[in-house]
Image (cartoon, rainbow, N blue to C red; front, side, top):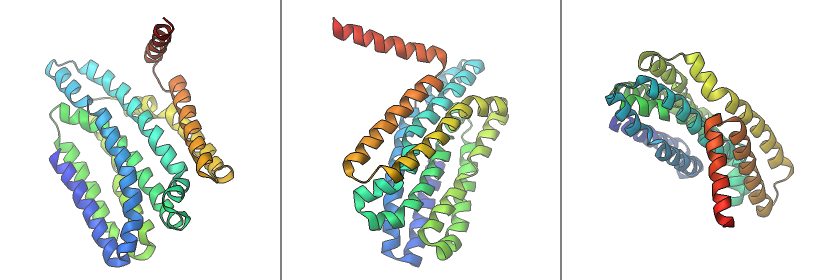
Amino acid sequence: TLFTKFSGVVSHSINQLIIGIILGPAGVAVINIPSKLVSRFQSLIYKIAAVVFPLTSNLYALNDLSKIENVYLKLSRYVYIISSLFFIVLIAYSKSILSMWLGSDFAQNAYLPMIIISVALFIVSTTIVPSLIAVGMGKPKYNAIFSFVGTMTNILLVYPLTKYYGVTGSAVSFLLGSLNSPLFIFFINKRILILSNYRYYFNVFSKVTMLNICFLILFSILQTLFIHTIFRFCVSIFISEIMMMGLFYRYGLYMEDRQAVKMRVLGFINKEKI
């Protein structure tokens, strides 16, 4: 909604202002570059998930609540998988990404804020489908309320945390502002869809989160022991994404969707042979 976007702009602008006052232009650059990089992926995920809004509106007009629930559960998991493909790599390889791009000195100062911002936006990305479902069902006020609470949390904490902990503190204030996301999902499930939160969280997050933890550990070790050149960095990113897509295909997709993907791939291969 317009208010939600406005809250995000206000929160970002105040963060930049406070950092500039306390740390100067150099501090703004340290937080601004990784923040813009990570937010680009967040915007891409939102664009991919935007189909949820018209789909929900049509189903709600038909009063097909059971279909809305099925769409909600399935797309929530798939958006979480897509988010994982981006954010797990950004978190695990943050130091290497910044080092290869802007040099080791900048990376040393900026990689921890980048990790924290990536975690924050990863958490926020879990609310994309619930928020679009709420808007599609004609109840955008809940999005505005939780967005306002998150923005105010960030605004109240950014000054003291930046003053005492620098750019890392600013990133932490942003993270703390995002921590109402699970509560927002809980509220949407309970008040709008009348859906069991246990069913939702287990269905959407359980398998994918266990895979994500394993990926983070593996990729962090890989970054420490293997990545020393641009070539090795590119190879590591490529292998990591292929590994994630393969395991998400096997353990993340619903069986019927896995079969549909398999049939499409086989159909494409057969067509190329002809």
